Image (cartoon, rainbow, N blue to C red):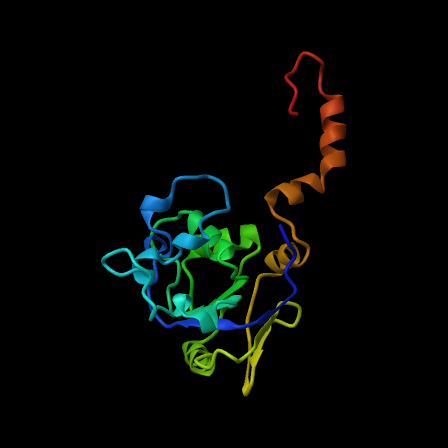
Amino acid sequence: MESVDLIEGQAAPLPRANVDTDQIIPKQWLKSVKRTGFGPYLFWDWAHDSEGELDPEFVLNRPEYADAVILISGPNFGSGSSREHAPWAIEDRGFRAVIAPSFADIFRSNCHKIGLLPVVLTEDEVNDLTEIVGDPSVTVAVDLASQRVTAPGFEASFAIEPFVKHCLQNGLDHVALTLQHDADVETYESSRRAFKPSLA
């Protein structure tokens, strides 16, 4: 996974509370276990009208937000089922961070595993930032090193677990973390009795 350091660019406002994983990526699109290819189906029911045509009023369909790398939403983002496809779809759409007042625990954990940064700010801070990015020309910066979010006339800090921060900054998913102990695994494996099954 790619390391996370400074995420800077356009932010798209989606000021809705309780955005659940079925709204993020509806069940009919869960047809693959690969992490790619889900971006076009992100927020499908909101992005399309009853005829299946793109709704030009939906924020992510508006051309002025086409390059957004940060998503700003409401409290309890990512609630509902634990499907990993939800953060996959957000990442595949080009987002690198999601800012909200709160996240569902499993969704937040699934984001960490793929290098998508969930940032918790207070509800007032999120409301202020949502208003600011109503101007699509605004640039927002999420600095993981300093744990700060900045925009014109706006600055706020966020908390993150040190171990999670270390993994994100160094691009370490669970596989990469395990491979850091490759020498220990090799030592253990070479010391096992020959009749025991290999762990490789």
